[in-house]
Amino acid sequence: MCGNKRPETMERITTPGLAQKFIDEQTEALKAQVGDGKVLLALSGGVDSSVTAALLIRAIGKNLVAVHVNHGLLRKGEPEQVIDVFRNQMNATLIYVDAVDRFLDKLAGVADPEQKRKIIGAEFIKVFEEEAKKLDDIHFLAQGTIYPDILESGPVKAHHNVGGLPEEMNMELVEPVKFLYKDEVRVVGTQLGLPDSMVFRQPFPGPGLGVRCVGAITRDRLEALREADAIVREEIAKLEPVPWQYFAVIPDIKSTGIKDGKRYMGWPVVIRAIMTVDAVTAKAVEIPFDMLCRIRDRVVKIPGVNRVLWDYTDKPVSTIEWE
Ligand code: XMP
Image 1: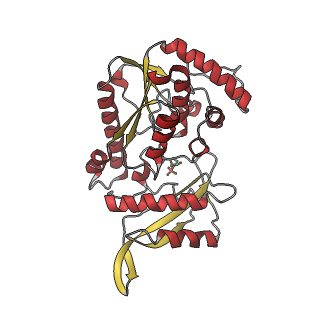
Image 2 (image 1 turned 120 degrees about the horizontal axis):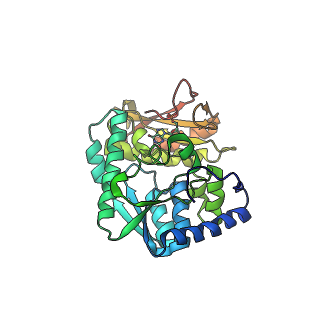
Image 3 (image 1 turned 60 degrees about the vertical axis):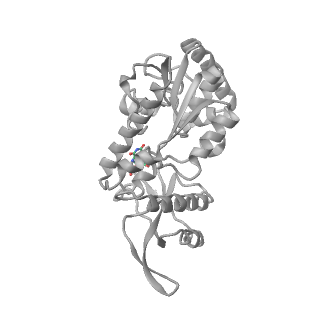
């Protein structure tokens, strides 16, 4: 597919049958575009890159080289799921890069949110380039660009990926889902056999837990956040309808708590759940008190945490994220 405008004749993909038709057409188109060539893809585990990967695996099998960079700011279980789905179940060529120490060392002591974002984006590109250099003979770069990315910000998925991907790599782009809207990507993902927890997962910012571990990230506070976030997600996913985004935040403050009759300083965990259409405005979701109590009772068992707060502010005046 060439150009950056969705063909007017293209049908909305709303059913398994239409998804299968798209998959079959794309499989042929991808084979025609790359032939026996190898294709490199940064696979975050998000919906768009996962569906892109699954399409390419169907079309060219092992010639897709997917690189999953663990920057240490992913949610609990995410790297494991990417490895399980793509390496174990789909038999893909998957390079897993444990870059946790690199990222956290670079971020140590950095409190400014935009500086944190820049560091994460720049380091991501560096790690990805280093991995690409180790591989010979790759002339194609796949990206999970979807149609709203093109409508909002031009052809490169720069705002969405962590910092976008290196332009100077001089590779031909492969973007099989670039004319799809999010709901269509999901229908295609399900038809390709990806698990619901991947296809229907909530939006997650590129800098990940980095912008929810407010201020300068420390490893202990980040670990507490990762645990708290897993609990908050597990409980709030039981709400009907499931909120658009729901997560935990750990501000960089401490307050007093009591343990074994002694006062000590611990972190608060903030619970946030919102409903929105486009993330431009958002409404806080009402969380029943018994659910709040269940979350509280589980979260306060995390080492270092001694208080739980509920952020029920709308956007505006708040933003969805805390940074
Ligand atoms: P805010 O906090 O501005 O967030 O109300 C609006 C939406 O954007 C997401 N978000 C990001 N996504 N990189 C991303 O890929 C980022 O740096 C980033 N910051 C915010 C946020 O999760 C929400 O869905």
